[in-house]
Length: 249
Length: 222
Image (tube, rainbow over all chains, first blue to last red; front, side):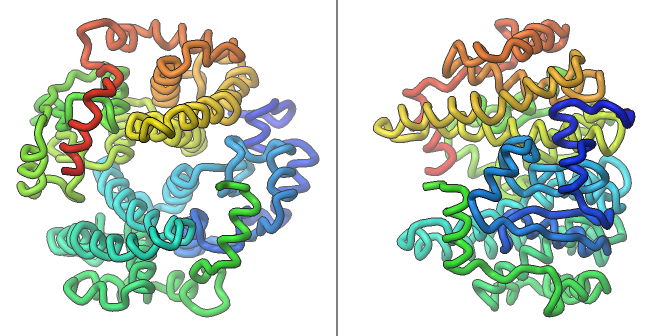
């Protein structure tokens, strides 16, 4: 692996090692999250760290200048956030970050097959949550049209799959018999859809039980309380900030 | 009881192509079932075998796997193409996630209405040239090794090669400013399993012909 002395270029971008990078990095040793002050793609990472009982710091992007400086200083491998500085690395790409946290904190099952189940389940919840997270950024006519479609997909495609998975597996958790990334991600997705349609779980008794059970696990219960680092639903101000910073049409 | 790996998809690249590449790169033989009509896809959906009603579907090791990333992760880990520890794994994940972002743009390009196609092509070329390829070029420059991660062949090498070749189809001189990626491309293309896959008659699929796009859209969207 890498030794201490000279860590050139891109690996430095990822692994740190210069004075400048050390200065940016967390002094406390806690993971440091750089993102907008809202959910977006970082929210699943906040959930997973919280569920794993890992404390983290946050650096919020508020101006385009901040973002451009991050790029200029070489902190973003593909010029994108989320950025998570953890264990001496500057990680980007949401899935890569989540997989690392899951792997490190025993939330990725035991063995290849459990891992395969977890991966499959989180891909489904990712697709579902992705639809909701991009919604505020679509034009108003699209928003009105797409929300019912999302609820329909939740009720007819995704939630039936997870209800069936719980039924067939017959345990408190989706995979194996312990909490995994899949459970945390599914709870996050359930709550996100419920915010749009409160009765969405009405035909899914096992998911209702799952929701209660996972919500009551100590680390998750804590994250669900006011004052935690969980972010509220995006509002117009958040959308405007993101668009301004990324200057995306 | 391990039968052959079986792929269920339409007879084209789409989201299954990266899986074909990785299986081929790992030297794993596979069979393919192609559906040609919407009715066949619907039949598959009604059979209950598709967890989220979607393909790709890959039958492997007694599992009927769906979701491209889950399938790729499984194949990579099983065949020792996923690095040797968490830190190598996360580097690989970072690199392949980016290729999948770019692949997605490439895959959707033929579905653009004709008026938007030139602009879309420019956008894809811009992202490849200014965001993704510079990052990979720098990775190779900084460690000076033959492979992207951990000094050994991994899925990152396979997936980056796949993306390079698809970009070259869109713009033949796309690697003009990236000498190390040119060397990388030559090197990885010459690995026996990959070389075999790149030869005519392999299970590698061709770029979709424009006239086929409406037919394919019909299969998936009706």
